[in-house]
Image 1 (cartoon, rainbow, N blue to C red):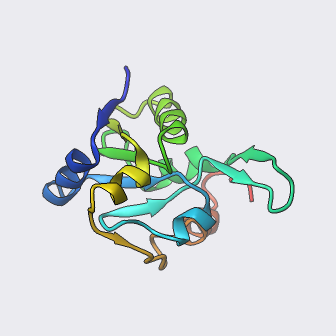
Image 2: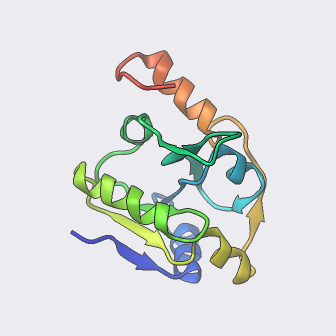
Length: 145
């Protein structure tokens, strides 16, 4: 199954009108903190960037955190800065059995260009650290740091 691609306007409409739809922003924690769509959104990075070197590392806890939060049937809209990481994350989710996955075309850049509502809200339940700690506290799944 290939994930559906939504325009920023379609994603906004879906997130506004469907109480079960969730936007997963797969950008890094630092990118997310600078701003993201104002909707039902969580930050679960697909990669981490080394703070000094020009290297990236896969987030080994991406799938365990998503699996802890959402059922395989949950409507998930995946977004990043432009589009590449969202596609990678969506493919990983589909391979893990998620059946209702879409990516947002042009990512957060497209959302902002479309003048859709944004926020820097990064409280518990939205921030990656809070979501990761919730999974770790449960101790159900082995998650990386």
